[in-house]
Amino acid sequence: MTITQLSRATSPLRPRVPGDWRGPLGAMLVALLAVLSLSACDDPKPAGKGTIAERTDQPAAPTPPTPERRRVALVMKTLTNPFFIEMERGARSAEAELGVELLVKTAAQETSIEQQIAIVEDLVRQRVDAIVIAPGDSVKLIPALKRARDAGLAVVNIDNRLDADVARAAGLAPVPFISVDNENGAFLAGRTLVDGVTEPVKAAIIEGIRTAANAEARKAGALRAFAGNPLVTVVAQETADWKIDEAYDVAKAMFARHPDISLLFCANDMMALGAAKYIQEAGGTKVRIAGFDALNEGVEAVKNGLLVATIDQQAGRQGYLGVVTAVRMLSHQEVPLETMVDVRVITAQPAKP
Image (cartoon, rainbow, N blue to C red; front, side):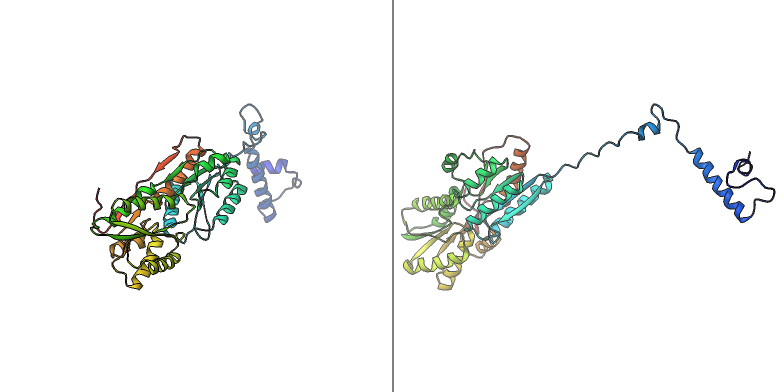
């Protein structure tokens, strides 16, 4: 039986009448019946084991949630020092490699310790997974970091070491530390300054923040290098708090008191460049200056003869390893409590072994 015959025999839409179904209304009715017939042919089988009807009666399986990326915060002293820009660059490499989310937080200046403490406390409230911190102060950040650990955050210390005795007394469990041997790096820079000294000379040191362990270590290394040559007398030690402008002013006052200083160690390149600027303006071309950090500007100053040496402490490597260590801690892997990155002496001439 054809569709037309079936429709004439059974259609409830109109009674069976003689005549031709090829008119407009008849064509519409035939098309409608054809659609209904095809729909009936496509009906699923009666429900039974393994049938479509049986499966669609069950709730759909939930879609597994997409795992959230770990949030790791990198807390640095400032971004006004190119050293920390390089540190962030290394941390960003680890972020891309490990698939974490990196939050970079910095204080306004390297002396803005209270601001850095506030940043740590805010990160605890945000419930990030880990904090990688280059603390501006070796003591004052410890209570905030203790609260972070108590809240379940992983904590990694880079660049400037937290005071171990104060941390122990505060109940802060040992924190993995990644940095360089600052004392040895400063010793190598100081040794470069005294190399070739054959007559009595006066030396001076411009220090970093005196409550920072790396600043104290660098001062100690420079003093050890100067003490190794009996012809060298240290006549001045002043702090410029890591800042280029303060170093300019400190150098100005220092050379006003001791105009015959001929060797100057500065605990970072920013201070070395500030001091060098004053010395150039004052016409002190015979002063040998060494810095620390191997900033692009510092390396260029070495090439131009403005500085005798600077120390590359691989800031990018420290940032990278800090994030890697934090992620390993979050994965409950064992990590070393101390990782020392090699320092490199940058001079215009090949360094002595």
